[in-house]
Length: 422
Image 1: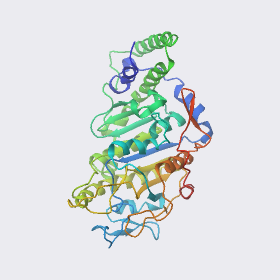
Image 2: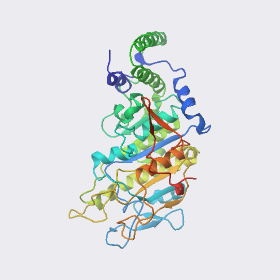
Image 3: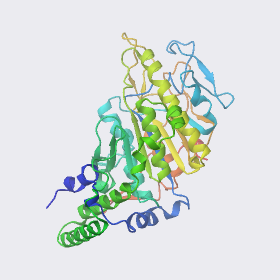
Image 4: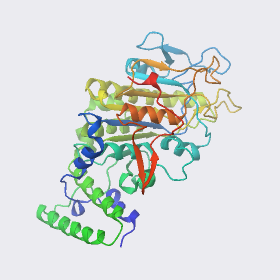
């Protein structure tokens, strides 16, 4: 008997062809059951996570010539009357596709609690471990026609199967993390294993799983089957990780730096049909030397993010792909003694674009110094309502089933931000 964790380890470390599962039906059935009502075109999500806290002053909400504004100037964008920081000249040209919400006000100012709270949507005192947004979307929208793993995470450092993201939904909805953008080890099947061998092994595996499921909880078995089925489809797409097949022009446009490489892989994953793609950027916790830090980080972000938006728009993918770019909080107006900005959840900005979202707009505002939200403040619960609505998932009419316990998918004291919805 394998533990649930060991059953799921196969996708990250044992996705070899000798253990790949049958490709028939499961993903499409899940999508038809969970996502059939959201429209004919399969919805997708690009979730860009700026880990550590991007400064709203040096990005989406500059405050020039003020006490806390800093040294960078605002620049005009493709939308008359909307300005963003000069560190994002390429993104400024894509503003007609974007929606900036400048009136975000959350609660946690610590990384340890803020990251989880933001990505889980801050459920209201439920006493259970809610799923991250990526796991929730993979649950409701399924794998789509591609059959590929529905939730992939492209990140620096290590990879693996991150079952913890799924919370009470169960390990089936965890994230497959590509550490440093690399595929799982042993992705390609050994030449020593023939198609007939592979089919026979999978038949044995299916029969063993069926026998095990007859006397044990079905959830681990479903998760194991799902892992193998998704692995089989991923094995067919080894070209996604082949650097030789990347257009040199794309490589130059996105940037040869880490974030550029990972964003380009993210685009390829979206093009291949992955439902939810998360891309991480680290190193944004600028308690010291904030301005030089952002002067180094922002151009890399600007280059890759603008290229992504441009490509999604030109390919017609922005119509069905929801794009979210955010951190766990913003950064303080006050500049500390180390020329840095500290953690600040009270008034910051989030970028959204694509499916179901108004384009070329700014929602809400902060006061003249950027200290407080000057309009209606919006917490992460409001954003979850808005994102689900944009994807065609009714946040009021849809519930989670936690072992027979119905739970809301978004904080029931919050609501959608109508100014953001198309």
